Length: 234
Image 1 (cartoon, rainbow, N blue to C red):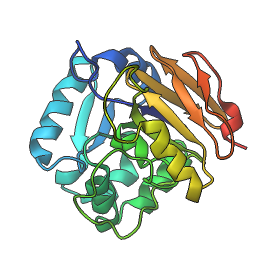
Image 2: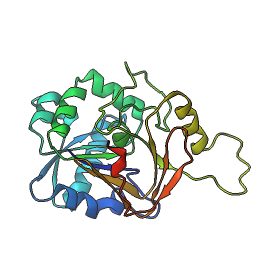
Image 3: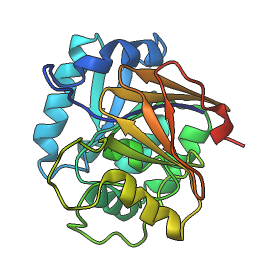
Image 4: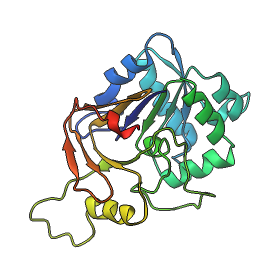
């Protein structure tokens, strides 16, 4: 498998995908000239696809959107050179993937080596479940089970506690601790500006901000950009 799982599409002070554009281009290489985009996490699919298309054209890449593929969504996935699932609401995204019967076709293509790029919600659905998303359940998917391309979960946009904050709600770390009261999967708290490059059984943490790893029954551990997290794939 070849996966690029990005925490966020836009980093403060830069434009859409600017912070990871070089990584995207290097990941896709010359063999994936056309990318199939999945805009289901956003309500305005036409507008979202147009935005992604403009950005990919700046990188010299062509982009088609699965939502208006003339041959149908499943067939478009079957013939895609590469796939990019954008961010938005994870519940809406997963619900649409199940409704369009795309979970198994995407899973098979990705496991077969098709390059898969996810950003935020698109990274969430690469995991076994979407239980560590930050989003509100604005729709009810038939299951929380997702593509299961990696054996760990991701919490994108991970935020550290702010010293001196008067906020009384749960921190991200506390929310993830609640997850581990009921679930076993490790959780990568992926800060904005960071991404994971997964190639078969290797996992590389890249970007500028690093990540915090949470495992059930253990203290969280800090990992800097450039770290290898291969142990997450047993």
